[in-house]
Image (cartoon, rainbow, N blue to C red; front, top):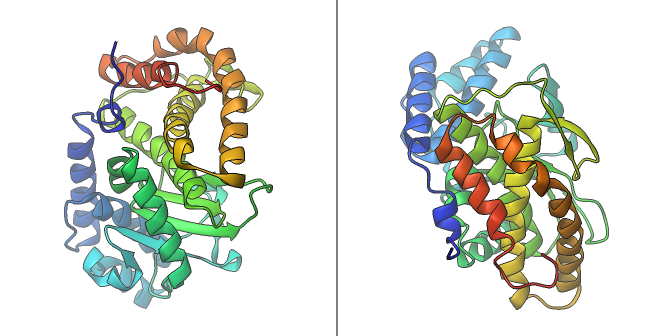
Length: 300
C-alpha cells in the first residue's frame, strides 16, 4: 500500500459540517454573527465559556463583550489564519470545565509579542512544508504559548474538549519542536471532532495499557494516543532530514522513544478500534499508525 499524504490522513467528510453546525448553534445562543471558518469555530467556544463565566460573576459589561464579539473584532491578536496568545501564568484559569489550566480570549487579552508571532509563523511554515498545514489551520487556529523552555526541559502541552481548536503548549526557540507539539494537540482536536461528527460514544470502563502513560487507560485515551503520536512521528520523520545540531538529536531521541511505545501498543490497536462503530474513523487511525512503518528511519 502506498503512503498517504498527511492531508489525506486527516481528510474526513463530516468534520467541517460538524464545526459549522456547532458554530451556528453557539452564535444563536450568544446572539452574535460568527462566520463558518475553523477559527470562528474555535473562537465561538471561547466566547461561550467567557459568557458563562461573566454571567455567573454578574459582570454585565464583560457578558456584553462576549455576546457581541466576532473574529473580526480580534484582528489585533491574529497571525492569520490563527490567533496567537501568550497568557501570563496568573491569567490562566481553573474551573469545573478542566482539571488543567486554560485561558479564554477576552476584552483584556493582549497580543502576543512579535517574537512569539515569528516563532509561530516559522512553526506553521515547517508544518505546512511537511504536509500538516491543513491540520493546524483546521484544528489549531488558536495557539496559546505558555512557558519558554530549553530543549533539555520537559515540555507540556494540552487541548481541552470544551475548547476545540485551541492548543496550549510550552515552547522552545526551535520552530520544528513547536510544530511537533502543535501537530500533536491538533490531532487530539481532530479526533474529538471526528468522534462527535460520527456520533461515536466509547465505553469508559474498557481499558488498554498505554505505553505513553505507563498505565491502563480507557479506550478513548488509548486511541487518542495512538492517533496523535502517529501524526507527530510522521512529522518528525519528515522534518529530521532538514534538521541539524541539537534539534536533530532531540528529534532522533524522541523517535527512538516512540519506537518502543508503538511496538508495545500495536498489539491492542485492532481490539481498541472494535469499539468504534465508524469504519471511516477507524480507517484513519489505522492508516496513520500503519504509516509510521512505511517511512525510512532508524527509529520506527
